Image (tube, rainbow, N blue to C red; front, side):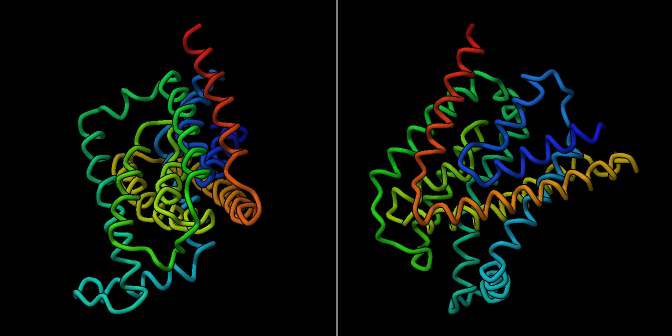
Length: 267
C-alpha cells in the first residue's frame, strides 16, 4: 500500500479515535469519498494497536492501578482503588462486547457502513452531545465512579457501534448527563476505550491471523506508529483544552460534516 495512503489512514484514526467526532466514520468516508481502496483489516488492526498504546501511555498511572487490581477483583476482593476501577471497567465493557459480537456474527455491522448513516449519526449525536454538555452539572469526579454509572455509560457506548456516532463522544455524553465534569467524563471515556479497543483489535486480529505477509506486516507497523503519534497528540490537546473550552467546537464540526454528508448522500 502506498505510504501516503498509510499515513492518511493512520493520522485520521489517531486524531479522531479520542476526539468526539467518530474515527470509524472518518475511515469509512475516506475510500467512499476519495475513491481510494479500502485499507483492509490488517491496517485496521495496526491503527487500533497504535491508538491503544497512546491511551495506555497517557493514562498510565490509572492503567497501572487498574491492572494491579485485576487479581484482587478476580478473587472477589474489591477493597482497593485498583480493584474497584478494574470492576467498573469490566462492567462498562460487557454490553458493547456482547452487542458488537452479535452485530459482527449477523453481518449487521457491514450493513450500517454507509455515507447516509454516518451523516445522520454525525448530526444527531453531535446535537445530543451539545445538549448533554450544556445540561450536565459538574457534581462528580472520576474517583466517584460507581458500578451503576459504569453500566449506564457502558450502555451509551453500545450506540457507538453505529458508524459515525463516536465511541468517545457518546460515552462523554453519558458521563456529562450523569453529572461528571468535562475532564472527568472524558477521562472515564478514555479509560473505557482501553478494553473496548483491545477487544475490537483481538476480534479483527483473529480474522486476519495467518493471512498477513511481510509486506502487510511492514505496512501495519508504519500505520501503528503514526496512529500512535497522532492519537497521543489529539488526546493531549483535548484534555488540555477541556480545562477552559466546552465540547461546542466538536459539535459544530459534527453538525457541519453531517449536513454535508447528507447532501452528498441524497443528492
